[in-house]
Length: 152
Image 1 (cartoon, rainbow, N blue to C red):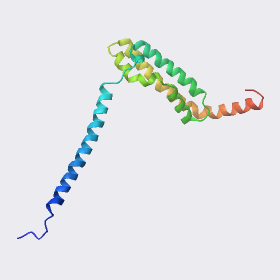
Image 2: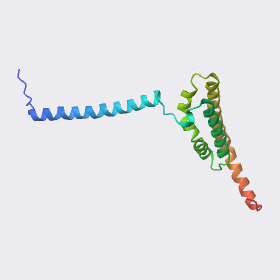
Image 3: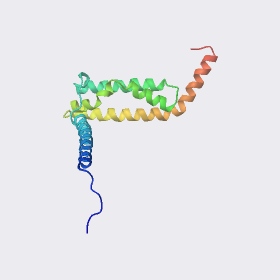
């Protein structure tokens, strides 16, 4: 039996192979680049001057939570606005949280304090969500009443 299919010209086959190789190189390059970035950020977080001392860093995180809670309490735009304001007010201290974890490694008091501060942050954020639903409407009402009464 003979094959009745016409054979492709050699140049076409070569062109397809070259295209596949180029495509493969691009996909592999992107994959390797992204994988190396993930590995680097996971195992070698960037430290800053603020994350150098464990205890000072934890105190900074606490100050950030207090500032964020105050900022969220002043928000009258509802749950989403309050949470966004809370998260924005956590900066810059919370930007170095991962590096601070490395600075506290091996310091039992520092590690315990860091765990508790993390728990407090998430509890405060949860409370901000919960309270914002009810409080935003009440705050707007009180602000309007204060204006009607001639207050600030």
